[in-house]
Image (tube, rainbow over all chains, first blue to last red):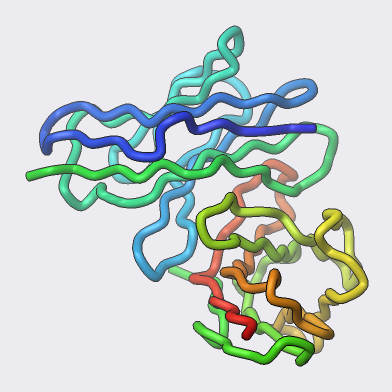
Length: 114
Length: 115
């Protein structure tokens, strides 16, 4: 069965500093990996995905993520955090068997301090 | 930008009652999904729907649950006889058909409270 781990419940970072939100996964075969963000009273908003190709993928709002197959990780990064980045971030995985169900991590709350 | 919408935003019901949660997916999308998130827990997959039939479902999606696309725009989740443990945030999502790895677009959710 596939699974996703987000080891940090909360990440605190100062505005202007780089941020990293960690994600590791377990799946049979090659993964499709996704990051979503949730703002208060809003749905899950797609940020970026890794399907194949370059290990560094770029997404919305200046976010990027690095796929590392040997470490089964897909960490979310941003070079310079903004206060408005404060939100709940979810990593998700799908396998490549044709199933479309996403398996989510437990979420990481990012708090960016001014 | 097109969005998935859900109604109501909050539903309170008595245990044993039937509830219907409604979703309007993005108009040119053909795959539809329901997920739920019990407070403090992970977002969990319930069911996916394509071409007017269920294509996948999880073990959570038992006989108490059903889905329907009653017209060209709505997608509903019905819980026949609600239990206390059905209290959760329910998210609808949709995706298009151009690639099986395309992202799913989520609605804002319906918070279901079962008393």
